Image (cartoon, rainbow, N blue to C red; front, side, top):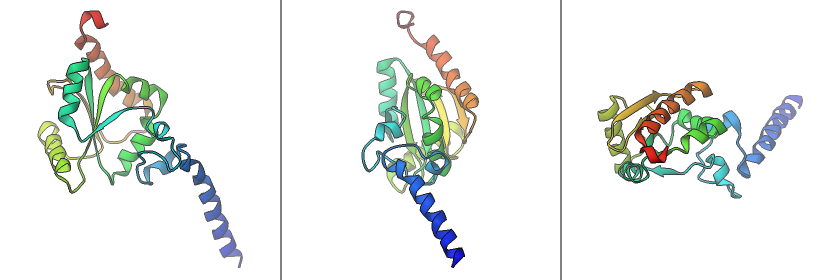
Length: 181
């Protein structure tokens, strides 16, 4: 009947609109609802990551890297099943103005919703250091674990998230040795 034809057409159009995602293209709002990609089926994983290099569940190494490179650390408390986390990674972190500032940090993702030991440790770090276990939660810290700024939750405002990142960037300029400025 006509009803079935309309529903089938809607599903067909929706399916066709997802094809660019197979090649690593962003899917916009839908990206938050599909599993996080470490790369697409046909390659193109760097585009999905916004060209950013993340350490995963390696807080101590992030601090050591920040110490060695004289940078601040952007800690992202995230989750495997966190839709808002996936939205931020797919739609906020890939914006050129955000990605260009994030490249000045050592980036570390700490997953807190898994069943493994790393997730429990990450959740303990978040709870003890920030008094919350909410995800997503973002923090800029120095290599000595001093909190510079924190940002709870998801935002759709580029300016709001950029202001948070720039708080860390301004401190990074002061933090850097005079010859590096």
